[in-house]
Image (cartoon, rainbow, N blue to C red; front, side, top):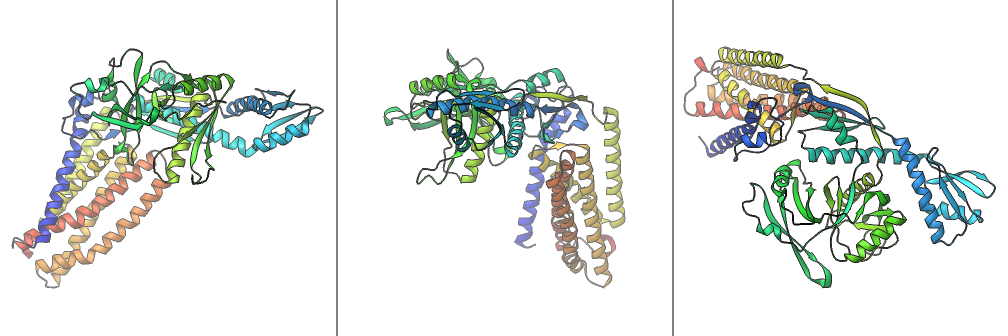
Length: 588
């Protein structure tokens, strides 16, 4: 055998061992009683410490759970925005020394009435500063403003995005396994919580107003350095930045990929008057997501009730490259509180906390009076990434300020589509069917059929392992996609074996027939799989929910099928051919 074969065999063995390793947590998870699988800490207590943390999950149709459709009151959001806009206009007119103006917002209609002695100057100022509004009616010494249609549409979309953001934060903190949270229509949000059975708690958690707080970070306390026996996966790290007097500030923090483990370890360990905040750091993939700590003042310096608006703006200063940042607006009381908070904590970090999760912690560079705060996004990142981060932060701040109220439109406690008995029978039927296919391949194609059976089993392991590593959810459509890919894997092996038989009928030796058969059938299998892959990617791109689950399983299965049917079976057959173990009478 040449050296290339040994490299190929080593790669196949590594794939098989890695697949088994990746499936160990899934085996542990499904061996637990169904009523205990999703309880906090139960799976972690039974999972081997050396095994991966991710496992296959069951979707709502297989294990049941809660199905909610939440309606966002977007019209009310528009009206309340108009009332806040009236306060902004009044403050702006006062700053521009326009005396005697009376500005009122109507919470029932969303219109803003402006009464002023100098109407022309007032209208010109509002037109320059508030381009998203227009004058809908003039009555003597007053006029009425309304939001433009495109501004209303944008505001409604933003209101739904804010609600989705807040719900994601809460569910992430709650620890529900693989939830579905998605916009449905123009003003609704679909929330599915597999394995959860307390609808009242779910509604209480998801329906309450988001809580935004501004808290000063304590970077001088080193209590974290005194903790011994950190949990597995929790490590100590240090922040370093320039503080007051250009001195370097070094502050310890803990990091981990498991938020629950980090939170449980820090419980009741904060110094008096302090608390630990958790910040989520999103990586390029879900597996790269980490959580880190901040030590915060327990008392909030400011809350979101004083925020009137948060939006993305662009720095026009020379040399800044039109970099995006987040502009935050407070009402009069909030402006005074924020000015004092920033004045007293220059060169310290201020944590922006939404629903007990630290979203960011910018450094206060100077006192910020006037009720307008600019939060610049740090890091040497592409403008597109900075803009995306700025938009996300603006959504967080606005959702904490005054998110659009949500109400429950539809509520169902969903039972599994397949009960335990049907799942048992379905599993038995699938197992019997698989054994029959394996037996047929072995009897009809003899040795090459056994080789195909080995590849088929490995194909199933690889598909399930990849899904487990991706923390995928197994649903009924996903199972259908899995079975379909196994069928295509069998079909590919049938094509290979029939082609080899045809080559042997022409008088070629087994070695020649195997080599020629695999070479000639490769493009046939490749074309068939690529065509199915294109369909899978299209379904995944434009589908949603269970349809995307089917497409994901199909794509993974097709890639695994090409590997096992072409690479694995050929390597096995070539080994027997190279060692003279095969001859025409018993091979194919």
